[in-house]
Length: 261
Image (cartoon, rainbow, N blue to C red; front, side, top):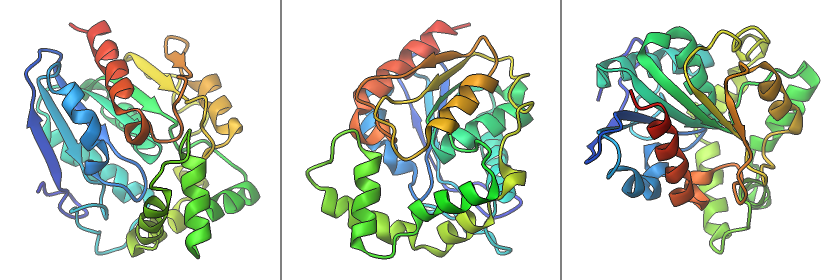
C-alpha cells in the first residue's frame, strides 16, 4: 500500500528473471491489477520487475474521500509509480490504463522509458457524443452486461454470462459511477497534448476493437508523434490481456527489447 494525496494505492510488485528493466502495467475502468494475471507469467522471464497498481477506487486501493474524478486518479497513479519504481520504467496501459499511461508520459517524461498503449481512452468528443458513449457503461440489467462483454471480446467467451455478471457488479460500484460521471472535456486529450512526447511509443488498436469508436483511433493516429509505432494486431479486441495474454506479452517484450539501453 503506497500513500498518495488522494488515498492509499495498492500494488502488486514482482521480481523478474530478465534484464529488460521495469514494466508497469495499468488496468482499465472497473478492472484491477489481477486483470493481467495471465500475462505476467509470459513477462517475468524477460523483465527485471513488474509493477501492477490498482487504480484509486479499484481493487484494493482506497477511494478518495472527496470523490472520484480524473485528476485524482491521474495524480495518485503518478505518485504511486514514482514511489514504486525509483528507476525509469516502460509503461503499458489498456483503455483507461492507456489514458493514464499517456498522462504519466506527459507529466513525468523523465521517469518513462517508453509507452505502449492498447485502445487508449481520452480522445475528445463533443458533449452529445460523450453522453451517448457513456451509456455503454451503464449496465442496468444482465442484457446490458452481455452486450458490453460481446463488444469487448474479439470472440464471445464461453463464460460470457459469468463475465457479464462480473461486469454489472464492477460497473455498479460507486467509484466507477463517480469516475464515469465526472469525466468531461477538460479531462480529454487535446491535439497538442501528445505531439511533444519524445520517448518510444507503440500505439495498438486491435482489429476487433468495438468498445471504443473509430474516431477515437483516428485521433490518436493523427496526433501521436510521427515516431510512434502504430499497429493493429489480429485477434485483439478491447482487452488483449483477457483474450490473448501471451501475444500481448510477446509484443511488450519485443517493444522493451527494441529500446534496450
